[in-house]
View 1 (tube, helix red, strand yellow):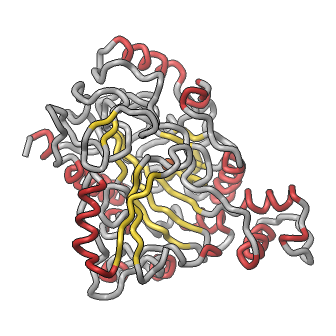
View 2 (cartoon, rainbow, N blue to C red):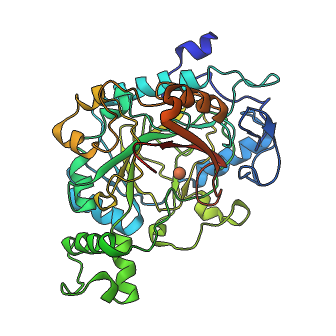
View 3 (tube, protein in one colour):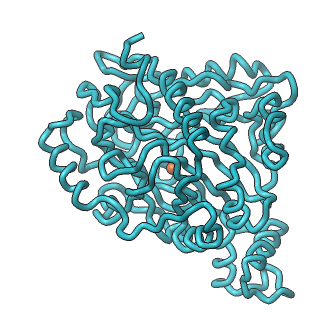
Amino acid sequence: MDSDLANYRVHGPTPIGWDPATLPNEVVDDEGTPLRKKGFGEPDPRTPARRVPDDPGVEALREHLRANNGIRGLEICMPDEVERAARIYRRDGFVVVRDALDEQHLALFREGCARRLREILAYPGRDGRKYMAETGRLPHRYCYGTTSGSRQMMHDPAWTSMIDLPTTTPILAEIFTTDDYLVWGGGGDLSLPGAIEYQHLHTDGVDAQPAGDDAERRLAYFRRQGGDADPVNSFADLDFRTQRLVMDRTPTGVTINFTMTDLTWENGPIREIPGTQTATQPPPVPEEEPEWMRLSTLVGAPAGSAIFRDVRTWHGATPNLSREIRALPSIEYSAGWRGGSGSQKTMPYEIWETLSPHAQRICRFIRQEPGVWPYGAGVMHPLTSGRRAAYEQDAGGKGEVTSVRTDPRSAGTAIRLFNRDHDGGY
Ligand SMILES: [Fe+2]
């Protein structure tokens, strides 16, 4: 193996990335063939012309970001500021909490991220390109969840050790107004140095109008937050504004991204558009995204922070013009009222057994049966064709995997694999 690939870490300077042979906005298909065609992926129309650190376009963007990048007055909470964190979260659709990971957990997560990235980057690119890109994603960007053959990282203790932390669990319980929430999975986005394009703004989940028991449960959670809906009313009795407020205040899901590095103006900090967790319109397409949104990033979040994100909030990745990998591994939680339907069994029973009682409870729907390895887990592959092969080999006739072209304005990629487990439904 190339010594660059054998030794790098996911924090500090690295020789990884900055491959000039990988053209701007280039995207590969299921099999790894580079394409630059309209309607496949979401290109950044303002990207620099070359993937080179001292390209004039890169230098100009770097100077612009140095002067302007980051939300002014970004509030950063301490882990014991539980109510303040929840208040900011409900207002903005996200909140940064520093010192969420102690030294030991940060080291464990960094080691896991470097190890898994090494597996992803082990596949060489075509025609002199340094790396095989991830199917449907912009160059030098990968996601631990979508490159995993099982679609999640719940088979890796580096991820599962972060599910129930003394710094994050109280804030999750405050946001969900109960400790009866669920784990959906975990993965997380990363960018290599030289990811010069902006990822398009998108949401990770669209909130459908609730009905029946789901609506009543959401109303009950809203009332626990001190919501002033008249307690004799059912959801259907409420006026439109109050129904919307109930939906706004009861997120379908919360994702925590953990920072492996300080987020700086230069290394591709995530951008979050405050208040958009309540938006029913789609985010602007790249051509129409105003500059203030491109600069609405979480610069200043130190390494070891937890970024709590309402999955509905408009967000996207930004250019990494540094020499440092920017990894944001995640744990994804869903509201308890959603129940287990749609959960995929991606966590080995043997890992589930080692978790805290609370983590065991909230992971009960993603736990595989004793002695059955979660289908596809353990294979990291940038291409959907490689992940499909790994999944099908494990699942045999007991599961299937479907390649889905997602709406690029809502989800993060053009093509994803969705595992449809016959036992768990979908
Ligand atoms: Fe996303």
